[in-house]
Image (cartoon, rainbow, N blue to C red; front, side, top):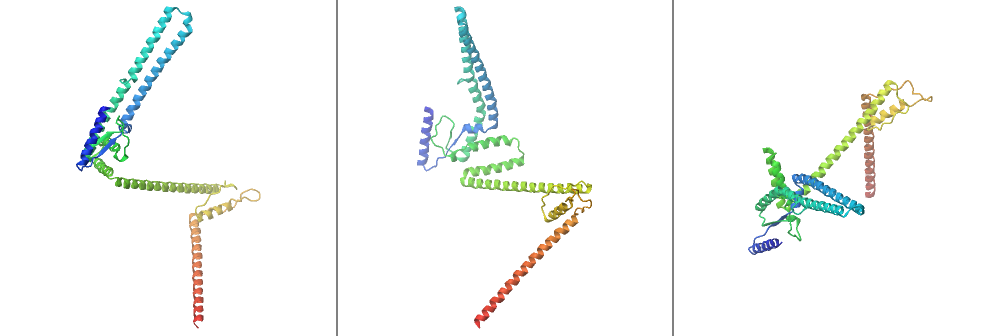
Length: 343
């Protein structure tokens, strides 16, 4: 603790000296626990260590249960035992208790297997972190870099001085570089340069965040459209399949009076459905007429659709002519009214 206060005191002295000389002091910090929890190798090894610790705990609980059973047995049989047997059993229980305490200390003590294996597990990654911190500090001119997760107490820490994510990126890059080709290495370097520029410029980071949000929204819109198209395609396929089955039923003479209705998607489908409904209507005796009209061919469907569009165009043209004629009459009436006023 005294060393930490001394270190902070010296850091403040250097910072004040730098300010007195007109130099800006750059201070950053890392969170070692956050970094370790986001390194895949460490998480996997930690999981295995936790399984070992769980096994050790179960062994301790088994020893405790055995000792408690011996104590209960001695308490029950104490009136029937001689003094020598009672002392012998008590000595055995004390020996087992001491053995359990020693085992617990060996596995979970301050210098036990769990603590030593944790330290051995974290040391290689901590060495890599220290190297990465030195590289970042030299490249970006940091004067001090603290560890937030250590015994050093940070009463306040601004997130923009946190370089933990930068350290993680360096660790991940080192791992990925071993598996990349030359072309991929160039792309990776370009990406790293962009990330470094974003770290140095908060405004660029905000712009990059906005671009990422727009890209995500655009991708979501494309995905939604794709799903909508797939749904329409499926609906069309189902409708076409139902019509095909109905035609086959008509051809085989097995159509019933309660044929399933199909929702048409166009005027041609509507006309075809109406025609099908007419031919499938049963007679008064409940039987389908023997002479049924044949199903529409594709040429007949196209012709029907063409005629319907032609009719719509004729109605639209007629409406436009009527509007023009009305406008013309209104203009003539206005002109006559003006002439009468002038006269």
